[in-house]
Amino acid sequence: MRATPIYYYSSSSGLVRSFAERLGRPVHNLAEREHRLSEADGPWVLLTPSYKTGNDTNDTIPEGVRRFLRSETNRRRLVGVMGSGNRNFGRHYQMAAREVARRSGRPVLFEFELAGTPWDVEEARRIMERLDQALADRPTTG
Ligand SMILES: Cc1cc2nc3c(=O)[nH]c(=O)nc-3n(C[C@H](O)[C@H](O)[C@H](O)COP(=O)(O)O)c2cc1C
View 1 (spheres, rainbow, N blue to C red):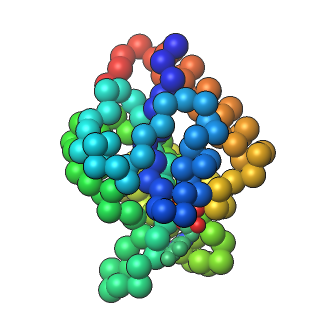
View 2 (cartoon, rainbow, N blue to C red; view 1 turned 180 degrees about the vertical axis):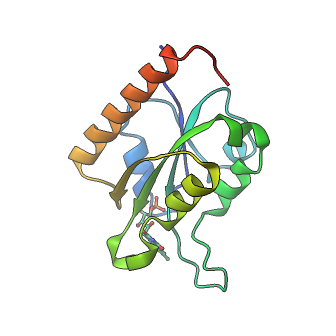
């Protein structure tokens, strides 16, 4: 069965990277140019932190995520979104993951804070395994 890959963005503090690397499946960091400019070869999941920039549009989606989503193929193959955030950001909590989900019509599969707890990692692993199975069972692939 295909392990659905996760494309994530992580800043130099590396909290999301630490989470992603514990999921036991292929993960690609969109902070790296090579991955940002690539195309997913099938269904994939986005894992993104939120970064409130304080500018007028109050954008929270990391630039590497935006760049990857500029590809029509990548947008079509996206199947779900996970988010890392910090509740201290109040109404901006998980804004990037929620905005990508809303704009793409894909579900938010899981949300956690910072680098996640061991329970968060286990839960995300279970969600991804169910997703792999659901994708393997579906009659057509995109
Ligand atoms: C400058 C800054 C702005 C942030 N803005 C938000 C935000 O708007 N909403 C949110 O839920 N978390 C926010 N966070 C928390 C990060 O999304 C969270 O710490 C995430 O785990 C960082 O992942 P990374 O270390 O892999 O980049 C912010 C953190 C920083 C440093």
